[in-house]
Image 1 (cartoon, rainbow, N blue to C red):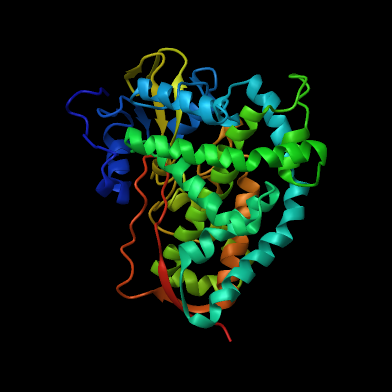
Image 2 (cartoon, helix red, strand yellow):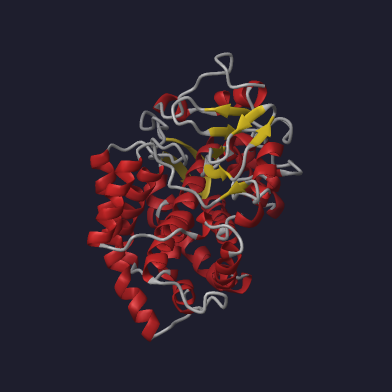
Length: 418
């Protein structure tokens, strides 16, 4: 295998390809499982087994890396903007290697422990039904903005000390951050995104200071006040601000929003699945959650960096190269999943998908995300009888981004259950 002109040519920054990348993923898995992108120089890993090896091999593939950017000089200008107007974000948990990562992760694992998630669960259930009941009598809604956005954002907002009336303001900040993650902004647009993040920093800084004086039972209070033993201190402001955007609000709401949106779309497209879900079998609902995550991976890809010269499938990957870990491709790999394009409620290995990553960097918010998806889809099943797309109102477009997959809007019509 080599990365010569005989290998496929794709541009994953093209909106049309982003709308439906799955044929391209299949071609890469079959013909170039380790593919050097001619636009970015990134090495794409697209097969399930290869990707799992990369994620588990933390010695060869590091998370400590320069920010994925094509214009380093621009990155320095953005850094100066943070320093002048706000707080320069430190590396997040996902951007660290052991032992530093392990030390920090222990604090996050304690904050997101099973008992804490169990305490949040009733609020997730109540919020899901409350949101649907607000528009149930209408017989129609725009599912993304009336349900998929507010459910996880309200839940994580409460845990991060934000007021519920501020969720759409916070959504504007996370949207700006996500657009920057997508790596498709001009410098002027990137500056706007950074300034939006700085605005968010000034919103949360007083909350940090209050919680230091008056701790409470929220997740944020744990993050603000827990001492990391090996460091001999709590997280500083720069570290906290980095975590607020990347690992809590974006990681804790944006990905759940994308999955809730995709789940409704898939349920309407697969009416046989919808009919079976309405029978109320618990196992079917749990498998549906996993199949949605697998089929429409909310996070299409993230990054690693080669810590040394590496060869995979005959392709030489030089030390320092950026590795693009294409979770969405691995989640449809025929070598691991039978009939991978089918939404199958009887799939035995549905939960083995990589929507939450794998290894030491497995998403720490996965348990909360699964509860949000469970209750979101459970409320949908309990409240709706028939569901369909609103005729003539949907283009099914996703936001332009290199890394995520997010439906912009989804207009649906439904018959409430009697």
